[in-house]
Length: 249
Image (cartoon, rainbow, N blue to C red; front, side, top):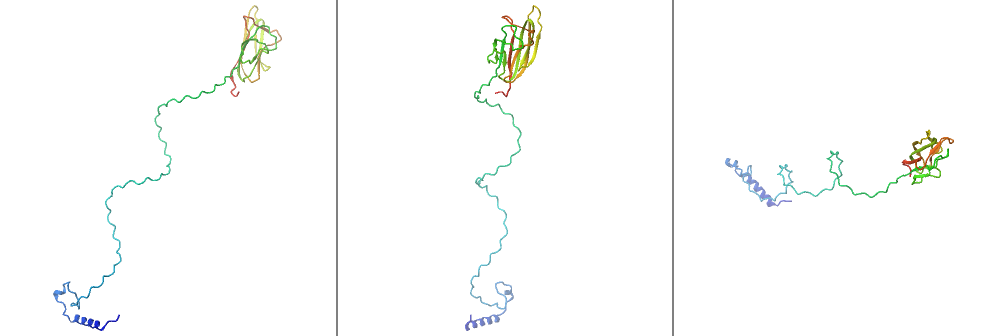
């Protein structure tokens, strides 16, 4: 921008006045109120406009930690965590007191009882040899497993059986045999003593399958058939089941 003639003239006059002034005294040289240099007698100009704000300074150093605050309120309950691992088995505790008795159970079905037994006697003596002796005097035969018409016991329940016989011997020697399934399994012999009544007996355990038969008969051709019975002397044949086979239904 160009300056006017008056402004230029004023500037020259001010410069001349500055150089024509007397220099500062010794007292004023050390006084901070007086400006130093060739323009000691200058006149101040009009105040300038305020300058722009400077750039922000750097962050200061961290201050010391403050005092501990008061305890806050409890936070909200968090979500349930995953199950933890199974811990070590603890020591066994003391034995507890006995509990109260339980309720009575329902009545069960009755167990099936296997029965098979007979006891029979001879009505008259001198039986025919080599055929089953027919004991027709019935003491017990509730299951009808013994047939008095044939003299044979018929097995209906497989298992272990006990058989016994007691024979009155009179007038002749006696030799009887116990048969099972057409085979003699045991023999009994008794020698008759003149003018005397004797006794002969035998017993055995046999396992029978269903359908098998057991009976007594005189062994020989008739010379050993001194089996006797009357109203005061008996000859008997008995048998019964001891243990049924468990797999039998």
